[in-house]
Length: 383
Image 1 (tube, rainbow, N blue to C red):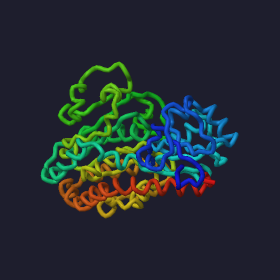
Image 2: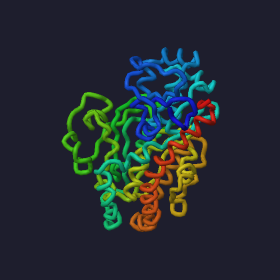
Image 3: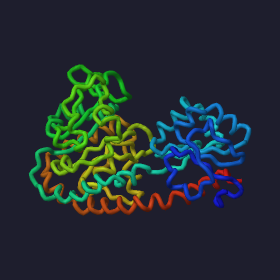
Image 4: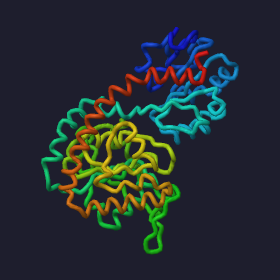
């Protein structure tokens, strides 16, 4: 039994997303909970798939006080994890009653006991291709005259991404960027509006757009210019793989900064994904389009931002409509400046962040086991 849990054993779902971090302390594991011989009194870390497939059984075991359960899904932010608990896994009441705990990718209200783990931060440098790409980041600063102003990558259609696509198209900046949009979705996606000539552009379709082949990751270049039947082409484009995690250095070398549209925008808790860690790994300047407080939170991790060069006051604007418009204005203002001079000013910050990411990749994993066992103790799951 795990000495960190007193008299309780620690049993891990092999797909719980933190298996490798806690494996030295585990007393057993499983890949199919329905066929697993239950160990009474044990603390179970259960991943999303097994939770969904066995939610009725898991509820009975919790309510009978047979086992303690931690739902582990740090690949999701707090907004999605909370939705899954309420409407997919049907366990929201157990979490709010502190009879089930969570491991997630974003912070949550105190009512929802959740251990936040930045799972995407260490992953971006786990790939040899990405480490090789990061080794070429100095070329970003060697080329002063670049063919594009900024890199603007969008996968699934979300309201804040749609707003900026249309807003940047109106002011002529979209064509001056390297941009993608992998979903052609029509209809309201949230509370944002963008009126132009009597039409709300948020309700209009936006064409699918991929990178030019030379800017795509090599393994997916043959997919460019193919015709896909789906209105959401990401999975076809990336051969049903997690293609977004890979870094091709060329689009960073040929742009002055990244306009990063994170997954979460109108939710009060930050969720940092590969979208922000990729430009940081490449020592590329960035503007993050995310929730209010995102910049505050990333600085709390020890990273630096560009507040002495770019107006980042939008991070304190709670109103989503006003925040997205201010981000659009800041982007437009920046594109009217001497971007080569801007890039030079950003160099020391970007190199610091690149190094800090490499250090945090190790630190965040080393610290997780102690954070986990303290979390368990705080909610008395070890008693």
